[in-house]
Length: 211
Image (cartoon, rainbow, N blue to C red; front, top):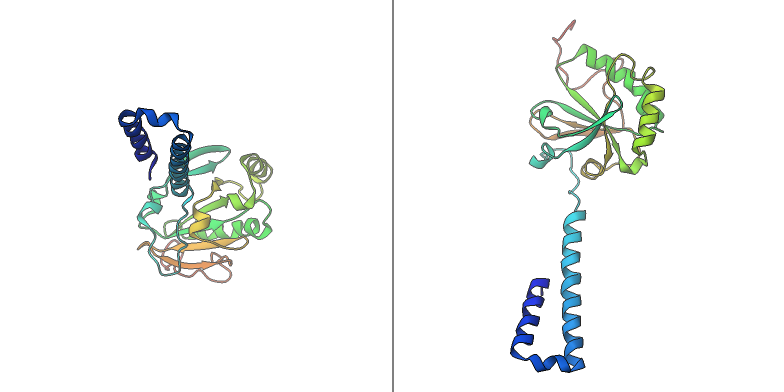
């Protein structure tokens, strides 16, 4: 029974049987009815709020709402909310990282070198999830200390305080990379950085720039 049904039942009893309110057992029954209905309503609302998306497997298509959900982006010291819709139809690589992950940071120079060589063939979005325990203050301090080291002469952009994408692409430890192809399918997930000119760059075609 929902809360609204319980309320309607109470009004009916009071109107038709006003004398019933003089009996403690009736009052107790009505109280229990309201308590159970209210608890069920709160539980249903809570379940809707905490419902997490099902993890994606390699080969599965990315859900449509993935592209329109808004995330908190940290960009060169400022924050803005926006979606990933601008990357739909293009190769997108999600780069999960944390401020305490050394490989996450040392890989950035390799990734940037590939971006320079293939500027139109892929997009990469860094993601710092809530599981890393990195809050806004820590990320801002990290940026101020490292903007001229790991991100010299380029923007530092990352989704921060993420609680959605970490559930969609579950992993243990960082770095973690999820590749979404142009057709919107999860192509590969790996802890290894595949954007490295020294070891080869899969899924990127030759013919751009000096290739």
